[in-house]
Image (cartoon, rainbow, N blue to C red; front, side, top):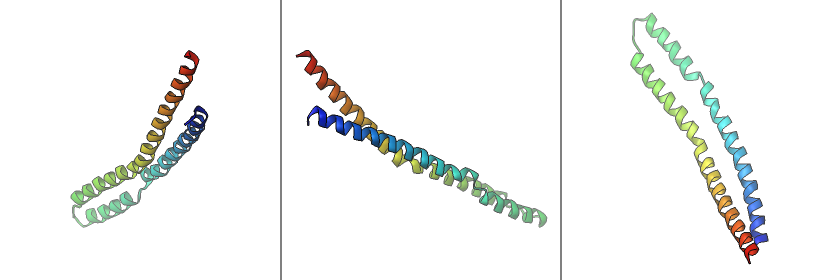
Length: 111
């Protein structure tokens, strides 16, 4: 592959890096919505109120729910991982190709 071809590929990789950065930011923005999801807490607070009125304890069940909601939140945040992995892969390809081009151009100057 010629240096010109490599530079064209490098530009394509640079564009891919930029696009993936936007996608990672977009996914992070979407997954942050889980932080503000209050449906589970609204439900268990209502149930706890009813349990209190009737002299019952649902503390164990509510603690289980809280743990599962935390687990769900963590799992949702992990949705970004494949995007970050792909971004790192493209960045590595970019860096390697950039170094290869630099080495080739340098060797042309030496001779």
